[in-house]
Image (cartoon, rainbow, N blue to C red; front, side):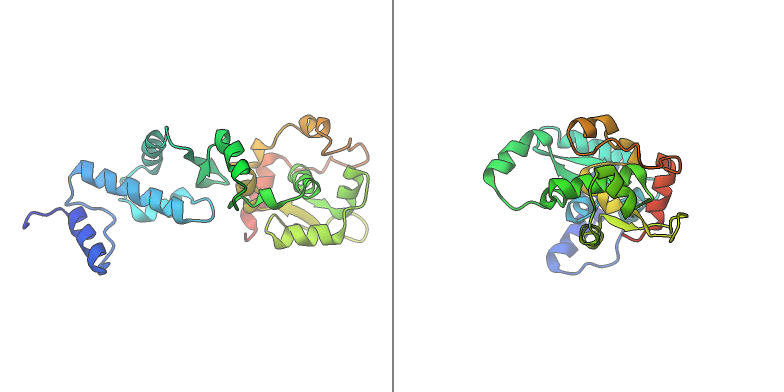
Length: 234
């Protein structure tokens, strides 16, 4: 048809294998068709990504005047009755299975994409402790837990992308400190460090002991922690 919309022509090119120039604006499409195409693009990018996708990244596939947040709102409404949803995590958006379907997934015993599921309780507790006290040294972590935190544990968590090296400690010997990464936020479902659970809840669960021996005066606030995460390559 001579009056085919841009979206229709784009679909035709996809079927023929000719991608052609990427049309972000879709100016020749009707408003309804344009919005629908933008929604599908955003969902496709989020679905394909192994990490949370930022607003800035999603803005690359929609028009300049398009509101990514409004698109996300419409997508969430569409997924309201589905077993998965789009969540805000680690400064971006990601597809996640709804918590209520966790028992079914565990009963099926299928491999999942959750990085935190492969961690032992001890490793998860070490990561959480770093989240609260970062930048924190291995010696300080050992005081928190009342037993030595091995170099192998720290190395393993760094290799898995949960931890990164922070600034040198001002204490004698200037030991390395450790901080959490964006991957930590993503794996544990936190949007920012402000979403960390209450410390007393972790103590009641037996994950942390009282930390009176640790000098927490130099502990950072949540915003400082976010700044450190932003500085790390993850």
